[in-house]
Image (cartoon, rainbow over all chains, first blue to last red):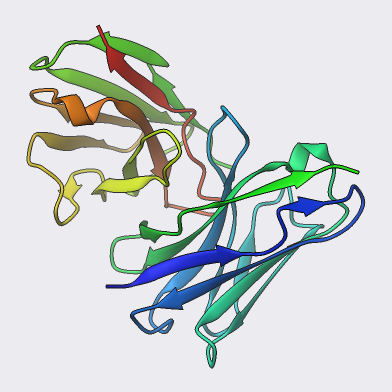
Length: 118
Length: 107
């Protein structure tokens, strides 16, 4: 079955760029859209953005100036870059598959904790 | 942006109880409403999509209803494995905002 796995540094310094990759295994990256969602400790879920395999993106306006998403269909991977991070960006970051028929996130990665600290 | 609210923010219930959680959107989202269950330390799991469609593999004690701005998630007979936090999410437009969550714990 399809599985998602986030990877990237667990610690990022303030003002630097957070970079995460999500690897899709067990299925094709095509025909779906791919999203990043984050969750600060003890808090709710925040939609960061999504990318289609065409490269088309939608970002949360609250983060839009700092977010870049990309997709590499040859590697079955998609990525998140968040620039100029602060302590407020400390969270568990999830990647998720968006199913275009149901308009919902039907498969999620396990999540990766990213701490912003010097 | 569309804002999502949920009530209650938490509730205590017993095994076998019928539980109802409400979600409200700040504007009409038709039936573009999803429900997720999250257990501590785990990723959210899709329960209901399109307001009332049960995701494959999800027990039939979970059901969803509503359209427009008001939605409901119902657990007909609460089981021990259902103690978790539940989030609604709108997929009508981006950003696909989530509600703040409802924590269901043991009475």
